[in-house]
Image 1 (cartoon, rainbow, N blue to C red):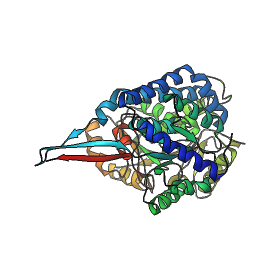
Image 2 (cartoon, rainbow, N blue to C red):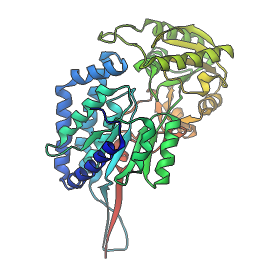
Image 3 (tube, one colour):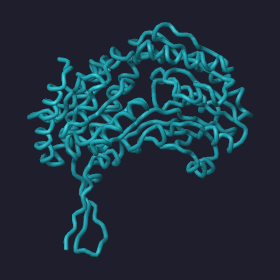
Image 4 (cartoon, helix red, strand yellow):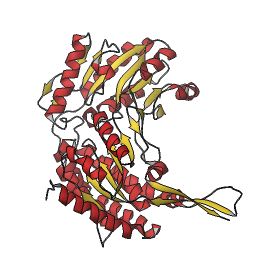
Length: 435
């Protein structure tokens, strides 16, 4: 049943506080066992959960199944590594004994997006559930089936009481939930505007927040890159999930000496992507999640074309479906370069020197990640510190993996998800000193 009034939401918050007081006392081994139950439930219901994702936001069914399987992989990672992450850490001091413990904060609020409706929630919840926190979750309004099943799938962790509750509230009411006394911190994945609003409210109430916002990642292809492998990776990095990914390669910078050949091969592979029925296991590009999102993308392209951008392939929209599109003749003041383009549109820009490539990459208000493709990995590693980004990937597209801290700088937000740092963001890092 949808909950659209604040008193009911406040009741759920109080319930999660009661659950927290119980869950925090459960031994770590049993909390890990709870995540094992979540994992097993995922494995037994991959088709059901994937069907909900595809029904909600039109992701091709094969990609929806891959998303659920990635959640299984995440569970495995924390099942295996949490005992190490949360064990008390000794520190050298002049006292008799000193060590650091990691304790849960309490009820956490998650505000999550529609583009990876299971993965985004799981990477927030699983590490912090094992830590001992409980959850309120405001999911995107256009993924109601996923939201309902997420609550069901996560609450299998505990037989005696729920540890996770959905809040079906309009976005304008989120601030009132942040202000609720039992809510100790908030994690938001979403737009820059939403991030600013949440940060302001959380700051007013002295509550921790983690913000994973937009991105306009550059992929830099140097002249010595393996062209065939790099083109294939570049198409995947931009076009998967119909381009609706914060870490997609939205600006592809290619050395002038291989630019024309790269462009030719990229266009060929983009055209060859299988489009169509979202329920077909072979479909690679489906419709975008909503028609208004496709219209917004179309407007960005049209404004850029008026400024001189040219379409090499694609560019056509039919309702929420947008063709895989490649743009060239790009200037750095065009919307497709300066703004986040959340759809299947690749912008391919030539460069002549390493300095120019670094400068073009850093000409963004975002700072989520960058990927470098080159045979000279030593050179690439030496360059890494010069990029104003949350992560640098060399000969790999920017991805989110449980073992690697994930997050950005600048207008891409702050704080980190995944790895041990996901736990430490929402932990009371408490020293214990013995004299």
